[in-house]
Structures are given as C-alpha cells and as structure tokens.
Image 1: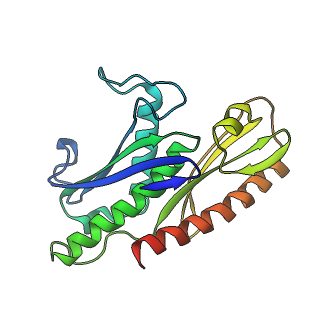
Image 2: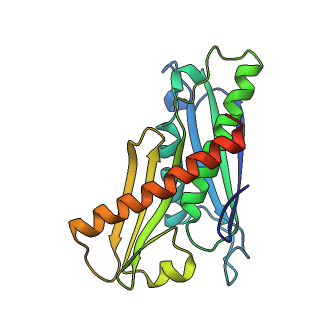
Image 3: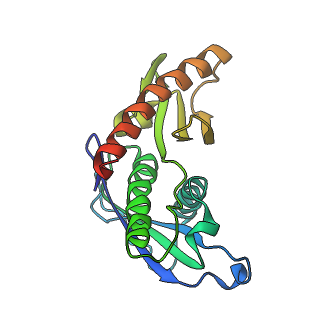
Amino acid sequence: MVSFGATRVLCAASIDDGVPEWRTGAGAGWVTGEYAMLPRSTHRRTGRERSGARGRTQEIQRLIGRALRASIDLRALGVRTITLDCDVLVADGGTRTAAITGAAVALHDACTRLLDAGLIDAHPVRELVAAVSVGMVDGEHRLDLDYREDVSADVDMNLVSLESGRMVEVQGTGEKTSFSDEDLTAMLRLGRVGLTELFAAQRHALGI
C-alpha cells in the first residue's frame, strides 16, 4: 500500500512463467502494469471499465510499464513476466505517481523472492524508480498536488526518475498558462526534493 497524502494505491506483483507471444525468442522477461480506480475512490462514483480500459487508463498503464522497465534488467529476470496491478482505493491527486512509486517496491520485492528461491542468479532491479507531481498554483510552485490543487493548477507536471537521478519521463502541461525556463527549473528542483524523500521511503519499506 502506498500513500501520497490522502491518495491510497494498492500495488501487487504477480509472477508468471513465459512472456507475451511477441517477446518469444528474445531471451528476456517482461514487466507490465495494470491500473484501475475503484468506483468510490473519487468524490463521486466512477463507473467500472467493464468494456475495456478507457484512454486515460491505458495511458497510465503504459506509463507504469515504461517506468518499471527502465529500472530492471529484463535478461536477468529470465523468461517470465511480472505484472504490477495498481488499484486506486482513494484518489486525491497524484494517483499515477503513487502507483509507479508503490509498484517499484512491489517489483523489487517480487524479484527478491525469485532470487531467494534460487530461480535467478542476480537481482534484476538495477535501481529504484519513483514519481512525483509538481505544478504551479496561483503562480506558486508546489509539490505533490492534491485534487483541489490539481484541478486549479496553472501548470501540471509529472516527473519519473531513477534513483541515480536520470529521468525516465517528464509530463508537463500548461493547463491555464504557459511557463518559463525559470519556472521549469524551479519545478524540477522541487520535484527532486520530493523524489529524494520517496527513494528513502522505498528503501525503508524494502529494508535495503
């Protein structure tokens, strides 16, 4: 369970032998993410996606998968698939960043179990990955926007980073206004503060 303020996301890792058909013969494993919001995770009921994932959900799932694959040696994983299910129990902003941060812990834990069982020779997670939101609200740079800040933000940005400091993804949009190079630099610096705290929390949770 990962919590960003009032946001709560349950992240679970499942390991299966084999890889998707299009990965057959690559001599490496695969890591993918699934994301869903429970109907009452928001302030009003969200309908279940029974007929297939909506566009937003698909985008977040792809983001989770990209982020996690950036942190792992797929060849060291062997020919197996790890699926990270990220289910949002309470949504108060930053659900995708919380999902990535929590899923990274679940992924590391799953790989540790494979290693302890003697199924792989080395830990495939090369480094941790985490994500956080930053933005501008009423001209002020803010970290980890909650729902009220997010819906009123002038600028909204999500940062995904490896623990080494290398960025995996930066998603930034001027929702109500444009932003300057100085604003971008300030938000990146603020995001780094949050990411440092998240990496420490991940390590604490994993006991490493």
